[in-house]
Image (cartoon, rainbow, N blue to C red; front, top):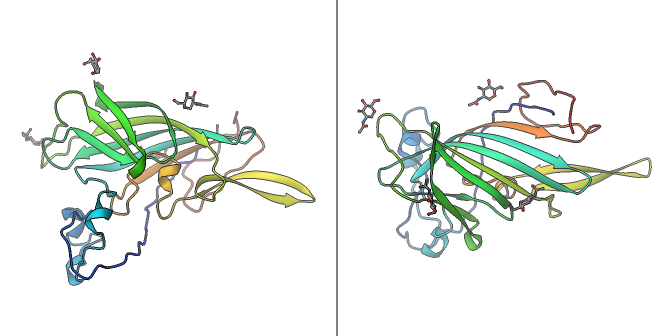
Length: 238
Ligand SMILES: *[C@@H]1O[C@H](CO)[C@@H](O)[C@H](O)[C@H]1NC(C)=O
Ligand SMILES: *[C@@H]1O[C@H](CO)[C@@H](O)[C@H](O)[C@H]1NC(C)=O
Ligand SMILES: *[C@@H]1O[C@H](CO)[C@@H](O)[C@H](O)[C@H]1NC(C)=O
Ligand SMILES: *[C@@H]1O[C@H](CO)[C@@H](O)[C@H](O)[C@H]1NC(C)=O
């Protein structure tokens, strides 16, 4: 097993067509991101005009929950051109009375969904809304605990799998030619909306988080990334 701990910050740019008239909207900039020293500190210097029409905004995630950290493991099978994975998302509610968590997932088979508060299992049901790339997790009873001064952390664990894609998005297969021999590799492309094809996640720029990533690969393969490697590879991949 090769273990690589990574921490990175997603910086994404989005381009929108502006409508003539501003329309009511839900923004995904959180109030604490507008505070001094935070990323959107000066956001009010700009004229914020709603880029989305009402029709577009149905594709946006609700901001009622927010992720803090992701632990991701991908296991890549270069023989079958498939991958499987698990993601543990540490998240909290941002307001009282929240009874669902909505995140993105695109063309991933969802094996299992588990929600926990500490060691306590929270009963939930999940469903995919393919038209919006949503994975919707609904509490069977009650709402997520919420405390304005002391956030209550939940852990959402999801197992998933998919084929390596062939459209250069998410985790996709590509190849190179070395002395007339074709070699396959798996590569990633997450911007602007392709992370949701690689793991279930809050796939919008304002949901900043830290990420610890583990890659399990076949023996004889190597892993490269363009961010810090915190742990050395353990060369015992299966
Ligand atoms: C992929 O997920 C599907 C749906 O849960 C499951 O039936 C299948 O066994 C999984 N395959 C792998 C290789 O994990
Ligand atoms: C969890 O929810 C399912 C579906 O509603 C129900 O069948 C089951 O009894 C619930 N389990 C607990 C421990 O509440
Ligand atoms: C919120 O957390 C603070 C600090 O732990 C605690 O003093 C307070 O009682 C909590 N409020 C509620 C409503 O649980
Ligand atoms: C991420 O991985 C590093 C290295 O193993 C570890 O020190 C750190 O505590 C991890 N972070 C979280 C939030 O789990």
